[in-house]
Length: 69
Ligand code: SF4
Ligand code: SF4
Image (cartoon, rainbow, N blue to C red):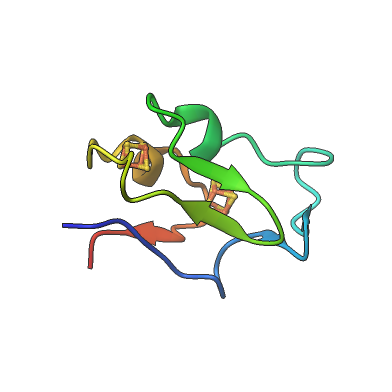
């Protein structure tokens, strides 16, 4: 199933981290993805043409913003 982003839970908004837990960007989904399918732009974006649905980003996200549901 495709990965979905709950933007209300994601701390990356308007091009910056809003959780203040780790400086300018949380370490999570982008770093966890083995195929570089995720990018932080104005909001987090997932390139579903690259995604292999491994679930690594779901495990890495501290804000439970990613899911397959
Ligand atoms: S499920 Fe895996 S491949 Fe797809 S975006 Fe998440 S980490 Fe990347
Ligand atoms: S790890 Fe979670 S909270 Fe952080 S940018 Fe990715 S989806 Fe958003």
